[in-house]
Length: 316
Image 1 (tube, helix red, strand yellow):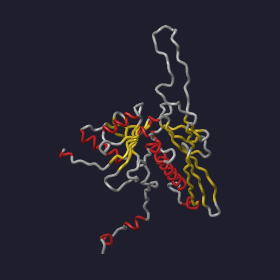
Image 2 (image 1 turned 180 degrees about the horizontal axis):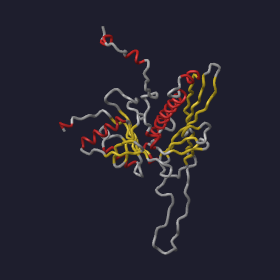
Image 3 (image 1 turned 90 degrees about the horizontal axis):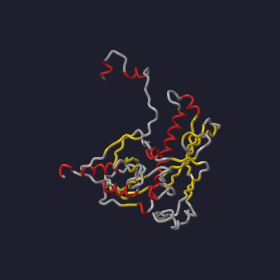
C-alpha cells in the first residue's frame, strides 16, 4: 500500500484536476540575442538596390598647393575620378509561410493567443536566418567580402591580445566592435588570463560584453566553429571579425526595404493569405536584407582561430 493511500485525505491526482497551471510562452532554445543586427547600423532602401560609388584609390584625391611662396606659384588642377562600374547590392528575401488551424486558434487561445505565438516564433526564426546570412551569405556575407589585404592569421593558433591588436591596426579608423563565436571569446579570455591582462567589461545595448582596447567583443554562434554552431569537440577553428559600422564612417552597414505592405518591423512584412476550405489560415512572412562594405578598411578578419587551447595556470 502506498503512503498516499494510507492518508485519509484528498490525493494529489484528484486535487490536480482543480488546480490552475501556470504556463510559459513557447520556449525555443535555439533562439539567440542576435547582437550582430543590434550593433550593426542599418540603412533603409526605397527600391531594394544600393549602389556603392567609390572614388578611385590613390594617396590623395587631388594634388594641392601647400606653400609660403608668392602667389605666382601654379595651383594644381584636376578632378576626383570615380569607379566606372560600382558594385550594386540587391536585397535578398527570406520567406516562410505559417499555417494555423482556426478551430484550434479559436478554442485554445487562452492565456496565450495561438496565432500570435506562432507568428512570433516565425519572426524570431527569420531574424536568426538574417543574422546568419549577414555573415555567411555567398554573395553579400561579411566573411566572403573581406578584402585579401584585410585577412590575417593568428601567431600561434589561439586568439591572443597581439592578434586582436593586429586586427585593430587593419581597422584603425573608429573600429566599432569585434564579432566572434562565444568559444572564440572564451579562448581569448584564457589567453588574457595567461598573460595577466584580464579585459574590462561594459554594459552596452542591454548586454554585458568584454572589451579589448575599449572595443566590445560581441558573441554570435553564426561565426561557425568547424562549420558548426555548437561543436561537440573541445577544439576547432573559427574566425574573428572586426567591424567599423555606419554610412557616415564609410563602414559596414546592413540594408533593408522600407514601406513594405504589412510591415511588422525593420525589413519584415507579415501578410494574411486567407483561409482555405478546411479552416486553415495562412500567413506569408518575408524579410528583405543585405549588407554592404563601403570601404576596404571597414572590416578585417582573423582567420583559422583555434578555440581548443587550455592551460593549467597553477603550473605557469
